[in-house]
Length: 452
Image: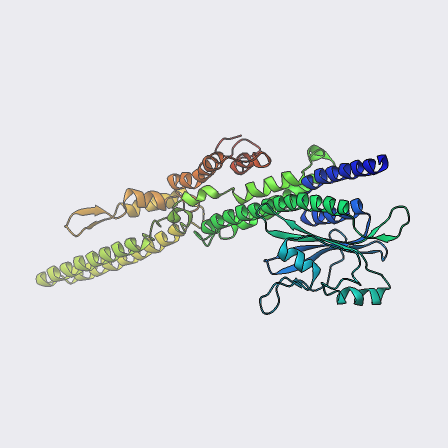
């Protein structure tokens, strides 16, 4: 009696230790492998299989082990399982009660079989064929469904050939074995469900971030793909820094948690750009707002050319009336010179509008000269050729953004910080706002917005 109690206590302690180990495992394949190996250990089973339910329709072989045949597939072995999935339902839609694993999954009931060769309730033809090929003798089976908190079967744990520790002979699975494996299956289902839920939530979270980034990238063909590239580049830089074995980064190391935190920060680094106006993000020329105002400038040049032509015609009429031939020639010369100058000025403003070259002070002065031209508007009022805003934009020394627009662009990082700091980050992601919010800071303290 004492030995029996000691055995039960020892196996319960094993079960508790296994439960603790399962709760700490983060990799799905490793978790599935631990579940099967633990079940084999507490029942002294020679072989076992762990199936996962796929879309509520099939059982997929996830882990296979057979100690006698030194056979291991799935999990962390690197050996893929090439067996076909087991259907849970027949072609006519009826539950598949012929296969023991499918039956356990569909009914949610444990199946304990002493000898597969004498069992009449299930189809073991595949088992017999396997034995015939390998010389193995499949005998006792214990098939236990793994059910989650909602009562859905998410997997099946199947053990084969329990071994008597003393005689080493194959024995039937006892009721004690069955209860222990059912308890393990329950713990395993909780651990597996938790890990799957965490992965699903992470996938959903990252997909939501991708949606935001796609919307930002769609704003401009000039920065398209930027939000998708940065996480890869950040990861490469982080890995390279971790590999440094000398210099200031010799002691720098990144854990998997650190890498994931950096990845999320990199994915969200420009989320504040979602508030930046498209016409600023995508400002291709100096005069562009909702449209490129250079076309309005061209229309004004047309007005100046029209005015020059009117002036020419008036001068010719006056010269003809007075018989002044030289006056006609002079008026024509002035007109030709005026048109040539206007065309030169027009080409200059078109080039300046592109912002492709640094604008020298003499070019900025040339903009002011052209801006001082006047023309009569639709009300007959004399109006400066270029407004102050147009002249100011055309005189931008480098690029196409003026100071106010550059501030709007730079403000995206302030918005990013404000957005991210408003979120209730879990402990393992608490540094995301700091990492994402510091991507425009510089080592010399001249970055923004904090000048760190």
